[in-house]
Length: 138
Image (cartoon, rainbow, N blue to C red; front, top):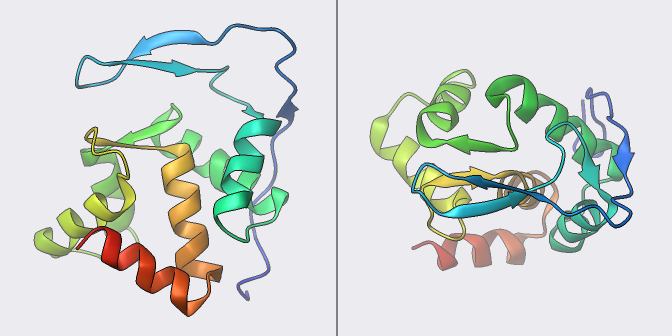
């Protein structure tokens, strides 16, 4: 399957008409706002698509798989590590570096926007975008 193709299935978009997001606490005790755990808002999809060249279907497919893996819209470090082990990344040092590269805000978890936008850059980004991503985390 090429970079522009996805074997993922989509989930419904949420328009979020006037709904206030629920407040949850992340593992660090910080409050984090999240919408319904099984849907993406149009704004979230647009934010991810602005950062990389994933299609709406690809974003929705990645979202479906993150929900299946984690049961929530973010991955804690142990969940992230389990996920990358399944694709053959077994070296703990590399796992730590990858987690750091995906965790843009440094809050010890990878939220969906961080995960999808980083995957998008790695899979479909221009060489300059990949270098920029690497340099930001060096």
